[in-house]
Image (cartoon, rainbow, N blue to C red; front, side, top):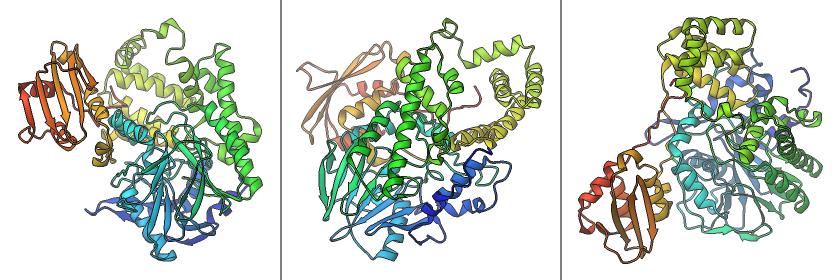
Length: 593
């Protein structure tokens, strides 16, 4: 702790630079009066860091909690602190181009209103999505209803939709742990999420791009603003504004380690490609100021290049050292313990793990190359967690004995192993109140000592749910805009992953779907518990043929009747298909079996 560079206060000067005005009060509500954002709840961060928080994370919280309208450079403004991400506004000849319209409609509306209160009632003349996650696009209907150019990186729609639909329920549930929305905003509770304070809980929206950026070096002009683009890994893009000598870095380089594999889950990001992309950024672009979708800008060419260079070195080091050590026989968890960052990177605040962490990257790199199996045959066919827990507890002499062992390890300050032991005790017997209470205490202590915001939130959410039960998700990813954006193939994909395989083993049925408004024909066949789809099938007889629009298809799958749909064949087939579909469980257990 003493080695951390608290004498370096440059970030505080940067975070305050260009300040124009705050939103006061910084509380944003939905139409029904529900609070979807409350930045004032973080006012406690103005106090000194208490014993219940890691000083480095407290410092990050202080910086991220700053909110309001800021001037980045002449003609470029940011609204920060009104969602997990920033909204950037670039003034053009006739209006303003919005880069990344926050994560919810309500917050985007408030941010645009704050900008207009101080810069005039300029119309929105274009929108850029620099990434395919909701914090880059979810608030778009708060700034425009459409009818303006909307630019996004190639592959945006597929990435944005599939991540939030295919695995959306599980990701949403795990995001409750990652962001901790149910935790109190206090020195003992939630003090941020590393990339920002938390995710707003307002209305998610999506307007499909009118054009995609297909290559690095592509130039576009919106409202007189010249833009040069760089495609970055994982469906992202940077934007150089040469007329402003400013570079938008999206998520590419921020004031934290990014997450190669976020705790909520996602496809593993390629740390090697990330580093090489930053090398390309350094080689291609020069700017007097760099700003991003999160945190505060960096001014000065030398400082921008230093930020990019150290971020590049960080991801290259984590990637290459993980490969070096796995080729010496170490597993992911072993590498995470053995790997240490170079001193120069340790002394850079922006390389610290507030959102991602070195351990996240190491295990993600290992997973990317070698998968879940570490090569040890003992791990090839282990019992699932509950069954293993029952046997471990039996071997240790029962639940009371496990709790006694755990207390000993707590006294020795080995909280990590105490958590492992107590987790077994709780999984073996959810009714063991002594074990639950003690595990909640251990999770709380681990959370209070964590530098990483998402680790802290996960530990504290685990403690909360052990004490009070499951906390429902507060963000709904199943937006009507998302469903409307699905291709017909993606709609049937989302149906296929709901088929209860064993229940459908002995069902066989075929439905032809003629989408009259799209001029498309699709066939779905339920066979051996799998729903197989085929576009433009051969002219063979199906059990049921439906002629309908895409909107009618959406209504049908939402539970509406078939009365308005033209049909040929046995309509009971549709009921048989619906009968084998499962509904996702949005509030499954995590800290109990």
